[in-house]
Figure 1 (cartoon, rainbow, N blue to C red):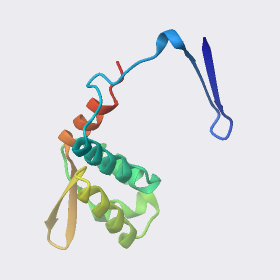
Figure 2 (cartoon, rainbow, N blue to C red):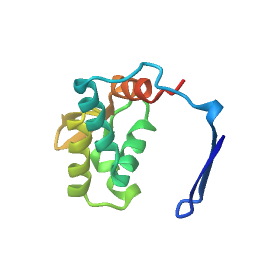
Figure 3 (cartoon, helix red, strand yellow):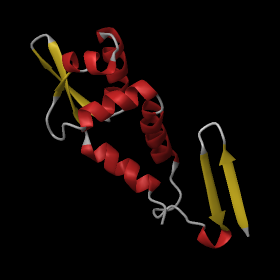
Figure 4 (cartoon, rainbow, N blue to C red):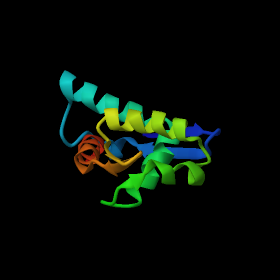
Length: 121
């Protein structure tokens, strides 16, 4: 049996054979884990936050100053601060104040948790 999904708005077409069905490698999640993973995914569900996160993640272990995020993304400093707070509150980034500017770094363990959840084996 073959199932075809067509999302014409995004131009994505996926074909799945019933023989290729996969499961979560870690099995079902409990309530606590589901809430934690949902908060991570919710923080990532905004395009601006994804763009901000990608700029920070591109620096690897180096911190990124909030002042360096406004121009490349074409957004105001208050908008940067708002979205970065959401990413910090979710545990995806850490924030360190250096003088008048906030500096952000990625929390690798949060992404390891997401990878483990999304690992479909």
